[in-house]
Image (cartoon, rainbow, N blue to C red; front, side, top):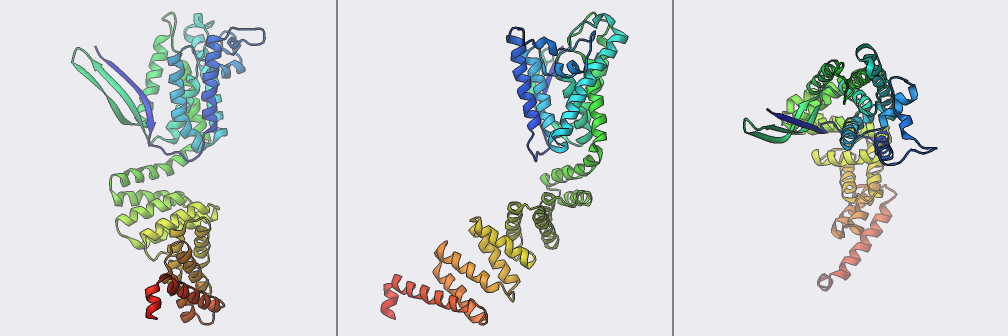
Length: 418
């Protein structure tokens, strides 16, 4: 005698966008559950009209039945699967395609159940069908196509009283193995349950929904996207395990397929930092910042530039782009990062026409933000001495004199010595 229970509690896939459809569906599930369970049917309100009856099928009820549930465990189980796997599917495929998978899988599940009843158990045709299992199965099918390389984290409990085993914990399981075994189990159960005089779970719904979810995922191009993301996921796993060279190889394979992924360029730069390949570190940071700027993502570009300057002390972008981002950092009150960017600019482009202006910005921040007056005076002195033809020389000389007088006033001992 043994008992084995498990429930999925997480995935090793990252989310990038919001998932409004999944959240909306969960709200509808919960709302209609309480209406179906506790509100009496009235003249203008009768939730039972949403139930799918195989004896009188319709396309409308083949979709609406999926929002109804008969008990708390039924409701919670479907919510867990729709929310956990649906968020990732919607995140990658978009709300429109995700809802198409949800709706069409629900309809396909209902009619698969109808066909199996007609062939194997016609006496059960008057029985009602409710629950989101068909739609959830379709999401699982799409997930298998799009994320066959991922892992699902399950919480499990194994109880074997005769053997003295009582164990619980969490573990990662490959999605490809978990879902293939799951669908085989559904098929066996679907065949066995017919002819037994009744059923508690309509396994035929799961089979139809799962198959349609897979087909739609292929039609939406999920297989091609999966091939690219597989390299990215494997690269991140290698990185977490400190396998730097394996991670570099997977990142390069991914970027060959997705060269416009700025985040991946930044990640591979971090991997090359671990193997001290400064040339490649610089290259991939440059690529990441350039892609962010092309997409208008200035905040992300400034963040990558800040990271790159920490990794490569003399890191600098092309002249105009570097100055643009440095000024943006100052405007957004990122003074430490702006100071570092300005200094790198002057070090990389000392003969630039904008170098005196950049030195003025450095001196201004040193004085007003950091109260480092001696360093500010030194910056003004560089303008006067090294850029005598610049239009800022007179202003720099005036500011240098002003700060010098202020220093004398603030230093009485120094004043006596003078």
